[in-house]
Length: 111
Length: 112
Figure (cartoon, rainbow over the protein chains, first blue to last red):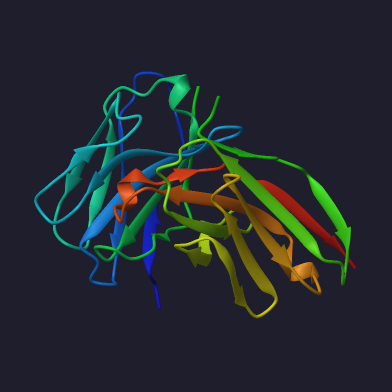
């Protein structure tokens, strides 16, 4: 009964370091998403993948890249982390016209 | 002005009370509306989904949409301590989740 699994749960980076956030879903969903959640800002879409092999920018894509590795997995990469990327990152998946199912988040701090 | 406005709270009410959570929006193209519940250190989970104006009931929860006033509400009856969470409204203009706009969330505490 895993649903959407995100790793790691917590991460601290120094400015300029890179890292990849991993996400996997076991619900056979076509669509996957990466959001960030900041106080007073709500959830904002970074990138999404409507189906395996496709990715598109969301509202706040700058400083991020994504890879839809296969139907199950969708990773988010920070090539050169900045303090402004300190946030909680959520991965989500959905059937084509169904509701979003979220993971439990990765809490990232960039110093 | 944000497309979706939601009072961040915090809101504290005694156990058993009726809770009213609200969002207003400015985009008249929004056609479907959702409420998500988010426990501390967890991801949001879908509570209610409505497509039209009017009320939708599910157990102790009622979602209300007034498109003419651009106002949506979530009512919780017989509130329980387990209802303590942050409640996010979300809305969209078509059936693509990439177009969803979220409110900032209202933090609710039910006092035993």
